[in-house]
Image (cartoon, rainbow, N blue to C red; front, side):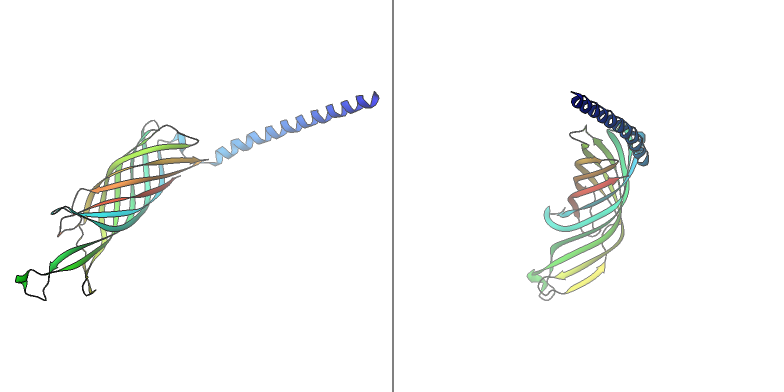
Length: 241
């Protein structure tokens, strides 16, 4: 009987000691959590704006506005800084930013065959490649829908992109002979396009990432000498501080 009583007292003492340690650990963990939340200096819910980085890549297609011929054109990428200003709660924002972009466009056209009599109407295929480096300034709006999962929000965007040519070149290649000749760029110095997109926003701790798709439709001809309109489709990823 005495041994049973001693065993019960020992178990009771061990239980009280364990509870005391657990309470101390809880008291220590709470300040650590609060301190961790202070370490995260990101704006999140208390700021009316946010700044981030973005990267995009995609394919473009050219449309000849004279005969509406659509051709696969090329690829491009852009990287830069994005800015969002909250205007209605945390759902609707005004978006802007600055991107450095590199775009490449290639298409095939027919030219008169100067090696033969012009009266015969013979032509030769010419591959034209335009390459350009641009500064792009997008301006638009973004709607962030309610959460659909743990830290996941869908979003939709719409706006315009101002595109300013910084440097470019034009290369002509005769398909029959393979000979190439480089000229000064005939891309327009300024272009304007409509942009729409959609994607998901992921909140991981105090960090926010985005991933989505977008489409751009040119509102002006991209070339000064020929009526070609550029449309592009691609993916975009981003990170907000």
